[in-house]
Amino acid sequence: MDAVTVRTDDVDRARAEVGRVFCPHRLIPQAGVRSVQLRMAARRVGGVGVIDLDYGQAVRIQPPALDTFYLVQIPRAGSTVVRHAGHTVTSTPGVASVLSPYDPSDMHWSGGSPHRIFYADRRAVDRELARLLGRPVDDPVRFDVGMVMTTSTAQAWARGVAFLADELSQPADASLFDHPQVAARFEQGLIGQLLLAHRHTHSDLLAEPDHHPNPGRLVRRACALISDHHDEALTVGDVAQALRVSVRTLQDCFRRELRTTPTAYLRACRLDAAHRMLRAAEPGASVTTVALQHGFVHLGRFATEYRTRFGESPSATLRR
Image (cartoon, rainbow, N blue to C red; front, top):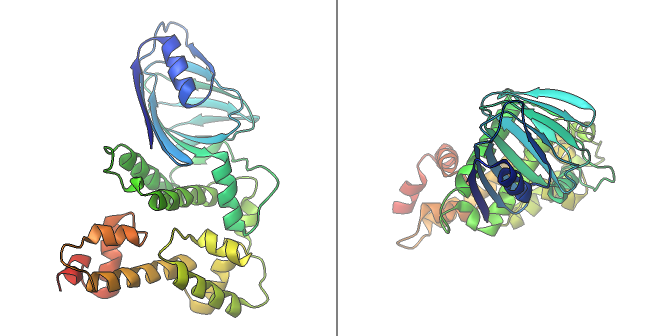
């Protein structure tokens, strides 16, 4: 897990330190501004990261094409005018700006405009899109520049980013993401949710399920795969990829055949396995350890879903 914290009022040092986290760029204080008040905390694990960045003053930022990564920039206050890929967006707390790797940008940050920035490696985005579609694509993923943050799907995604930021700020050996499988699963989930929540050049492919000639057989194969591998770092995208169909097709077949979703089926398998382990646990076992072993990162959500399914809390099962 990588972490960088920087505080400086010097423009040249601010440019250099931010450039080390992102890429070399031009940083120009706006008219009448002689210095900045940079406050930056950058945290990264695997192919994703969160950077909290505040220049304190009005600045103009001109990065080249990012090349190897995407950025989703969410102002916590103030506003930013972003020109990118032929489009101009005024970004506010309700509208994030999304930079794809293929074009330079020109951004005017207002004074008092701290940003939370989500970083995603380009290869990780390509891999997750292939999982969702059930096949790789040759064309690059280009997101729309403006992302409305007030929709339910965007807010759910933002909660995931906030959770990532909180866990990455924990001391060494105290984060859930110290476990590589947990970190990998959460990375896939955040990138997958972004691909589904915000429009890009392949959104139409994700939105339309392919007709499957034998949905019953597909669902049976998917259920068997999930039952055999639910204790691994498995996502619905992985299942779809293994069966060579899109996630949308898999979801459609599950709804028609079982009146549920593959995500719900996978969660139920993991809950059942956690229930069995808690019932058979030796003295000194931990609910947290069991939850993490079965892919439940949000412990509060795990407890709620467990109680709904089994009528008691995980700790009550453990005490039996």
